[in-house]
Every structure is written in structure tokens, then in C-alpha cells.
Length: 308
Image (cartoon, rainbow, N blue to C red):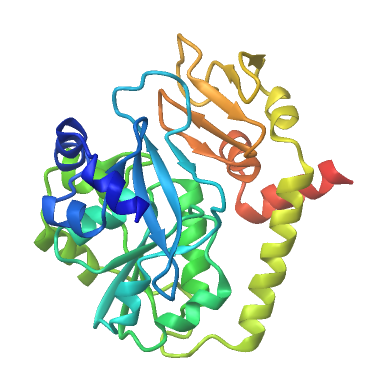
């Protein structure tokens, strides 16, 4: 199996990075078959049936280029990373944002899953799998995209509760920051779970109805359509001067922080952006939300107007 071959090739320096900078323990590194393909860290993703689906490919920490932090191997799609945890029917599970965050939680004995599609992608059909798990928590990154994503998940899983990371993680801070940068432990994260709250206005004990699924699915369809029709390069160029430096990306000075050197990269092929200075990242919707200080519905309305 290629995943095991890559795991056997994992260099010691990458293992050290995963432990020290990502907070992932050796047993979890080995259990989840984290590996190395010669240029990127490989994270094998398995489907609900336990079959290998594709790899998420994380950037080499020594790679100082402006290449994306995370890529997907051919055949990649939005999948739930951690099906084996759900199928084990745990008493408690955490839905987080990002493969490394999931593994950091697992390293502290906390069952966790994540969508490989990012904060904005959680398929309605996945929600039913959580219906028999008594305690479901949602903990996304401390930014606008994360808040929008976790609220959407909470609407699909009404008995779930939203976990708020402390202010010390900073803007765009995440689970890994909580454990690694702040030096917190699993018990302290359990304290955050105890303080978690349900989404205001939702029925805490009700199961999602077929109408809930239809509404969210219709919204997903519209969002995906709008994001595909509005060219991210053209949109961002309205706000900052872009300079094409390669076939697949453009660079600029980041509009979200004092950027002396161009650290803001736009990837037209994936309709995404990432700043290597302040870590701001996302798609056309999250860019508009941050740039114009809009809510998610307001950003959608702007995209509708742009698209005519």
C-alpha cells in the first residue's frame, strides 16, 4: 500500500516537526500513517467504507516558497477525515477544521473528525452519522470563515455545541495554537467543552429534518455556483495590485496586515488565496467578508450582483 510506503519513508526531521510544531504524538503519527513522498507530508484519507481515497499533501516546513500549505492528490474531494471514529459510536466527538488539528486532538485522547474541504464544506448527508453520538462539539478556527463554518455545522447537527477558543490564540488561531503555542493540555481543552454552548435559536434536542437538509443543500449549490462563476483573481485585483509570477498564481502585498514584502498569494486554479505573513486564507466569499466587513449573507449578495 502506497500510504505505508510513504510512512516508512518519513524523515526524522518531519517526525520532529509534527511532534514539536503540530502537537501530534508518535503513536498517532504511526496509527494514521503520516508519511513523506519526497517533497510533501502525506496524510492518507480513507472513505466511509475504510478504503483509501486520496492524500492531503502538506508543505515541507523547510520549503520557503509561496506554494500552498496544503494540496490534494488527484481524485481528491470533500471527504470526512475520521470515519473510523464515528463508526465506533463514541460518547463524544469533536468536529474541527483541518487535518493537523484533528490529529492534535487525537494525540490528547479526544476523538475528532474534519472535512478535507475546509471550513465551508460539510455535506448535509454527513450529519446523520452524528445523530447517535450524544455529545458532538464543533471547534473551528478563530476567524470569520471558521465562525460561519461552525454555525453551519451546528444547524445541520442541532444537538451539537460550539466550542470557543480563548482570545489568547489570537485572530485566526486554531486548535494547534491552543496546544502548541499556548502549551495547553487535553484537560484544559475538556474545560472548553464544558463551557460550549448550542447555537442560539436552535432546538437542542431535535434531529435535523429533511427540510433542513434541502435548505442547506440548496444553499451549498448556490454558493458553489457563485464561487465558480466569480473569478477570484479579477475580484481581488479590484482591491490590490496583483503581479503574476507563475503560471498558477499571483502575488501582492497583503491588504490585511502591514506587508513589506509581497506575501499574499492568489491561486486562480483553486479559486483561493493565502497570506504567508498573517495566515489569512480562503475563497472569494471569505475575502469579501474580511475586506468589506460583511456577514456571510451580505457577501453572497455582493457575489450575486457581480455575477448579474
